[in-house]
Length: 103
Image (cartoon, rainbow, N blue to C red; front, side, top):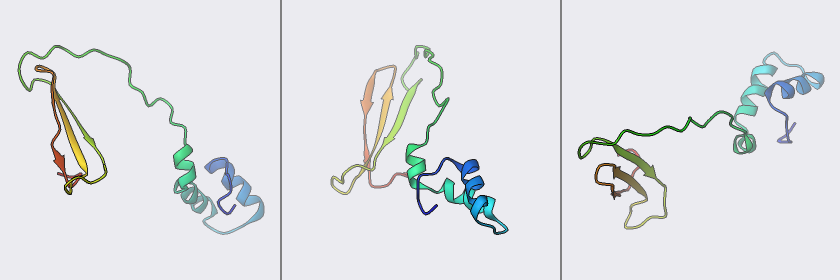
């Protein structure tokens, strides 16, 4: 099964056991399938959306702030990450840049 298309962990283990035998075949095949880059890219994620809801109106500055880190981006003056911040009270956005994503 050298990087061929495979049908998931359970079925891959079953197919391998039909042709090969070694003590840790199940865990080895499971580990291989979990680290398969092609599988991770095409994996179907179900139930990943949260239900829609509404936010309460903020009563003061910094009462409700949205934060998000964007990057890595193409470098500009050595910075390749941008932290976006939106204050819902003033509906104002700012976006300081950073060289690291763990700031």
